[in-house]
Amino acid sequence: MQQAGLQFINEEFFAASVLPDQIDELLSLGWRHFGEQFFRYNVGILDQDIRNVIPLRIRLSQFSLSKSQRRILRRNEDVDVVVKPIEIDQSAEELFDRHKERFDHSVPDSIYNFLSREPSTSPCEGREVRVTKQDELLAASYFDVGKSSTSGIYAIFEPTIADRSLGIFTMLKEIEYSIETGREFYYQGYCYNGTSFYDYKKRFRGTEAFDWNGNWFGVTALAGIGNNEVSGNNGAA
Image 1: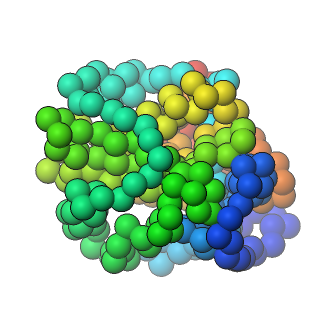
Image 2 (image 1 turned 30 degrees about the vertical axis):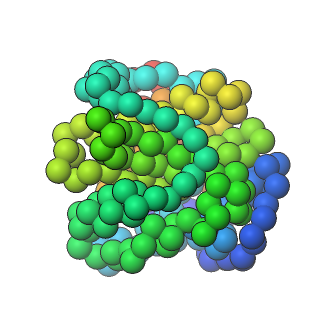
């Protein structure tokens, strides 16, 4: 259900190069990008139902690990993790092809549906979390680096070991990098109001939601987002 007085937003533009402070500002206004295509929209359709689209971010000074997130980190103590500039090699493309088999609709053709051909520098600095075990690539996630913020773009993982929760694991490693490098915000993408497959993005302490009028709120302050899925700033596990 649309919020009272909220106008429909559906905008895009293309840019090959965006400065660090510019990516910060764009993220703060609800923009995201795949490759050089920047976009934002505030209404989506899920299972023939019209939903509000809600940008999310974590205020990193308010972030702490939940019990379930600590378990995920412990479950993956046996892997090697490297954070480095994005470099798409054959193992990443092969992992992407296996990962996309999880989807039964809107199946992407290529990792380059989400990344530019120069993803470490265009449209802004891009880094990856690379997860390996005995030199086998188990997961990779890709994220933007701005001046005061970072933003997750896309993640892939080996579907045969879903019990490791490597999608959440790489998000936690992106958050860890963001805190260690002094960023203020980590943007985890969009979710819908009500229940959806994006609900995992709501389950991070310190999460804020954008109201499409230029304001960010702790998620518990925004009606309709929760369904008891959000830990937000209230310290709940």
